[in-house]
Image (tube, rainbow, N blue to C red; front, top):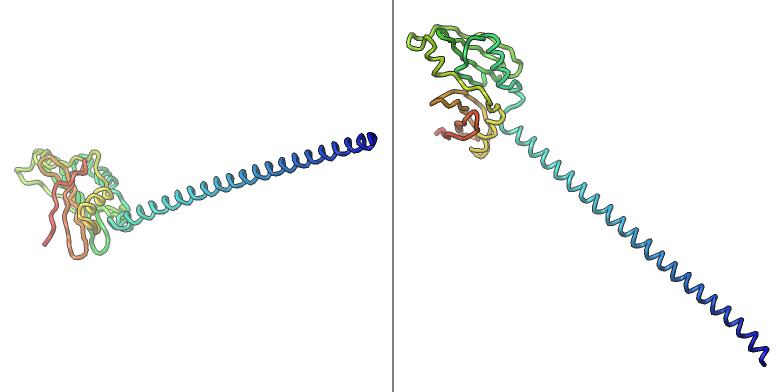
Length: 227
């Protein structure tokens, strides 16, 4: 009887050890499986968040580009006016180096836009026309000033301040924003009370509005709606 008990006890012990080992392996496998699942879910969540962020950034960038393009297309006709006002000024100054510019107009004639630049020296007025698309230039007029304007009087009184000048595009943006829409179709750079200003004509449907803007600061000085 004692011998049988001695045989049974070792066998029982072996079965207990095997059972513990199996339980331990199963627990380890469960823990490993749980960790793998959590890691996969975490990676999936991170990738989904990244993709969502990139998608939002792409949509935002696309929206901003569309808004910018839309704004450029509506404020004025960029296809017809590719020469900036600074280039027209330089062309005039290269031709009449001793004259000061007193007025610049930009408007259309037979479907094309031209800068008309006027300037004076002490006794004579000079006018030049510059194609706003090709830069082709031609002299228009040259005439003596009236006696009361000679000896530098008109030159001193009407000389434009061309420093830090607003571009055609910026002046157009300010004018159309002030009106609330439409498209800029004519521009005049002039001077009054020692202030150089842009006068921009905006066409919105059947309505035309002239917006006067400080040519250096961008401040709107006057708005005049045509009846």
